[in-house]
Image (tube, rainbow, N blue to C red; front, side, top):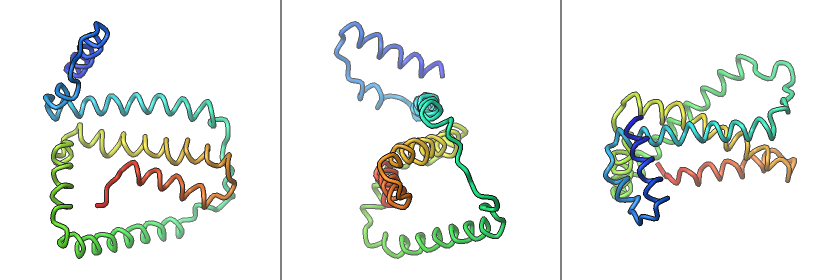
Length: 173
């Protein structure tokens, strides 16, 4: 975290002094470990900001779930359906992707350049814990509540927020 603070502090000070610096060149020169630390810092800031936004805007609204809405057999059914969708999607991708080798190559380069190719504790913290929590907070929390102000049709609002979520990832794989 010290390296992150040092890099970020230098960029801020140089910008404040009116120095014309190439931020992209600085970022490209950082190690993957430092980049992951920066990403985690940004995710933590996002979690704080969006959590406060959610609490102030919607936190006092508690959803009213009817009794018995989360029955064990329903949860097991959803898990089985989710696994089925995952297997089906994997089978389709396995049959389609060989026809588009450039797509898979570019995806592999993206994964490697982002540091997600290695399973370090920083990668797990960022990609498995913080990113999903932040995405759910923004899309299924804030965006869904805001869109519900414009339409009471949950199915429509859910599709719109899901499209936003998909566009955010811009990833076919």
